[in-house]
Amino acid sequence: MPTRAPKVLVNEVSVTFESHGRSVVALDRISLHAHAGEFLCVVGPSGSGKSTLLRVLAGLLRQSAGDVRIEADRPGAPLTAMVFQEHALLPWRTVRDNVTFGLENRGVGRAEREARAREMLAMVGLTRFAQHYPHQLSGGMKQRVGIARALANDPEVLLMDEPLAALDAQTRTIMQEELLRIWATLGKTVVYVTHSLEEALLLGDRIVLLTARPGRVSQVYAVDLGRPRGLEVRGAPAYGALLEKIWFQLREEVVRAMTEDRGGEHA
Amino acid sequence: MRAPDGRLAEHWITVGSPILLLAAWELASATGLLREAFFPRPSTIVMHLRQLAADGTLWGHTAITLVRIGWAFALAAVLGVGVGLAMGLWRRLRDGLDPVFAVIYPIPSILFLPLVSFLVPPGEIALVVTTAVTSFFLIAFTTTHGVHQIDHLVVEAAFHYGARGWRLFATVLLPGALPFIFTGLRLGLGFALIVVVAVEIVAASRGLGALLWLSWQILKVEDMYATFFVIAILGAGLSYGLAALRARLLPWVQDVAAP
Image (tube, rainbow over all chains, first blue to last red; front, side, top):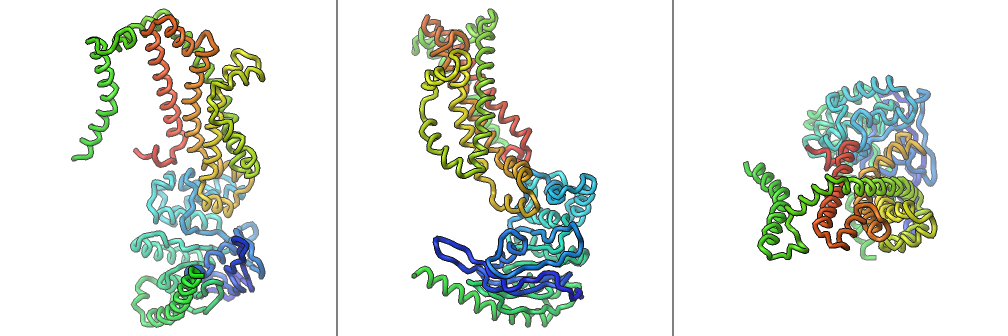
């Protein structure tokens, strides 16, 4: 079980965008937390501001109100490292140089960088591809590099923005198992945004369900399916019951968002 | 096994079409279908080309033209890439320069010769500067576009992983723009050749353009065609040279990295 110390604290955070003179509320007074070592999944319909929340946590976007706290217990380590949905690797850098990019920017010496890259590439199974360029890799391999790049920085919190959404179904399943293995090895705190309830149930300790437009916290579910968890969890009765329960709630949100979209088009 | 056959056929067309064209020309001139006085046979042109090369005339003119292109291209490349990058990075600068460039760019390059001659000493320097003008614009435009087309997500990711200021420029913005910069350089080099020949026709007594014009004026048509041929080979050589350099320097660019 993860320890109970809070690692990520999001308190009454709102984000408002200005667009064409109108302000759009993307996040409306969101409060949530993640314990140290916890795998927290955030799910919600399109437009619920899941990615916006991650961007606030990553420091890429400043919230309009409220505060975010990430407890740092190792000096020098970055607070967050993000795995982006479309991998966002630098095409002109080899796999290895992509993995060491963050370390390079922080002034870590070459020997340490390379040792770290070797370690991370071994962990994601890409040792043989260190000198390849991203365009020579498959989608799944690119995302492994994205994960290695994030982990190489040894962040306090790992942020993942639908990292497997662009992959085909088989690759996604394999990557989910990989993620579970890596997480079990490193014990990182993870905030993981996904569209897929099945993915959230397989990976998460808890699931935060957001509403659409504006994004608010609808429900928080504990996933009491035991650890270590593998694909076989999908056959467990508790899995089906929880999936149905969350889906029932999520469905309402999706339908509501769709209806409002249609209303918006007529207006 | 259809694919290799298809590729072979494609290859044949590339190599075969100029040969076929030359053969048709040879035949047409030999049979009198084309007037030999204006369209000498390719075999005759080659003979004259040999002669020009043997007595050294050709080398002197070619060397002079190459030196002019070299200076003009270097000038256009340095200024074009510099200004293009600056325009790509600073919106204000772009907004200010865009209309000016839009007005100047379509002016035929040769018309800059008198203008340039007012500004810099006439002669060799004016020649080089005039040759550089259009290349400069081409290189600046493509460089600016090169900065703009960089995937926003990649820039954001680099920022997230701590790249700021100079490092952001050197590790993300510059390499991201490089494929387009190379395209601009290739276009610019081609244009430098076009313009230098035109400028030499108008305002120089030596160089390939001058040789071409002189041959025409004294009706040494064979020499004129021989010079044409040298200019064409020079253009193709420079263009392919830069393409090869790009393939070597930018192994991560997909279309050239593929075997």
